Image (cartoon, rainbow, N blue to C red):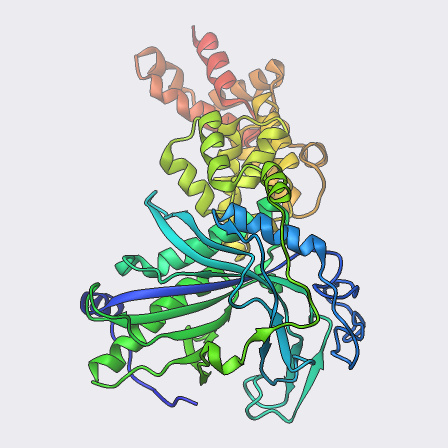
Length: 501
């Protein structure tokens, strides 16, 4: 295990002296009903070791059978990433010994992946498009889950004992491996984050996975190396394992660049190793010395025949691919009339699907954007949650917009209605009714409030008649206060001016 500990170099200084090169391996759990090579069900949160079969447990004599739906999903992913789909491919045994791999090998693909030679165009926050070349996308099975009990870190070192749950063992995965990502420079952390984010969106659009990073459906292994110049040979890389949030992907790249720069500045060499990401401290720590492919002693899996996806079948799948996220965003931007900056803000806030659903529920694009990117975005930020996690639906936001459009509530009242909906008090209509928040539009009630305000401010009429029209604001404000903000301010001003003549 590495014991390299160094002070960090300031990120901006590190970028001035070194050229970062990335490599990202993304694993996505496929949303099939059963596992990759046996009929055990996919279940999240089930009782430990309840979703297993003899194949899941690697028992002697248990033979695997390929999940056809998983192969179809892998082809979909390959096509969406502009890959060539292999005319023939096969599985291999990746040999390593660890308690969560009950067979003592992982069934994966090595020299013959199902998809290869692709690319993905990634849009950064300022609209810049960066192309990431894909080396391969291959099928494999997931490992089980170790729980290390006792000790301070939750890791095996220092633990009193370990528990193994094989429910996850055998769940189908596709691993997407990039070629070296060069030329990103100072934007390398942003490129890494945007790439993983774009992949997640594609998985969801293809409906091949729930792609919930917090559940581990999507995990990224992030390789980072530094070299003196863009023309220098590649440096020694580290691989930060199982990073499972977009923010962490970006932060881990920044940290490794600063850490490796400090090592190189000191005249030392970077150790090729796996590292663990610590979200709480924003740091990585050493894992194990990184194995090369030959250390795994890959050889063809003798219990599975090669796969040969027919060209006809592949083209049939291609014809069923949905509109991919980047194309969809451009279409929606044109339909909604948003500027480039407005659309980027929407996407960066994770509000695209919410706005689309709100518009589909009847709101105007302008109103949908106003509420999601305004009051609701502020509420989410204050609460420390994602927009989609707020206790309000796109349909309810559309109902709120309709109430404002009809003049039944104004923006100030609408914010109170939102508070009620978020508190679980019912639909916007119900909150309006229960809290008596509807705008006072009855002229008689407004005339009475205006009379009272004029009586309390006798000099205002003369000021208005003398040409100081802005003095009307005092009366309008008094009426709004008297009606607790429920008066139609425009109608109050209109009635006041009629009264003064």
